[in-house]
Length: 220
Image (cartoon, rainbow, N blue to C red; front, top):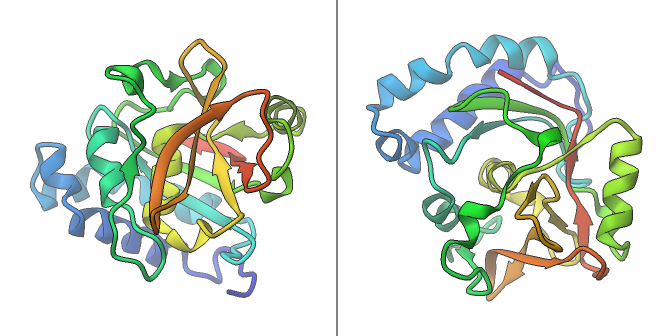
């Protein structure tokens, strides 16, 4: 997809598409709401999308202007990850068994990546960070911070793949340094068994196929 910028790419229409995607996947029922109630919940974010989606849109480069994120308070990670698929694929995403029982609950947003709302919000200027493929995650996270950008959380990574499965491709997958559990593990989403997989890697171990996803800002 060629680069486009807001408002020419239609931020309002793109927001509506993302709401439609979540509705079709069952997010309203998952959050205990009807489709109408869910639409009402996220409706105020539409104006924010139109006003602030002004960065390049290039799926080939893994960059999108914004992503609508639903927090784990409404949609648990264990239920949303299986709703992801690869672009053109059918196999459901999954959580790797390397997460011991109760581990996902301990992977929470860092102070710098705290969500601005308890239910839903927008993540702007999102990049999968393929330039960091092969870099030590600790080093990549430091560079992202120096640039004044923010690391993606697990929920945000799932949202990115949900709305834009084209960004998850072979050798261009990404770590999610915005969620940590107090140890050396850094969660990541990559491709396994022809499906998206949520796993983790050590903060000091580089992988040629894992970049570091980041964003410009969050708004509620």
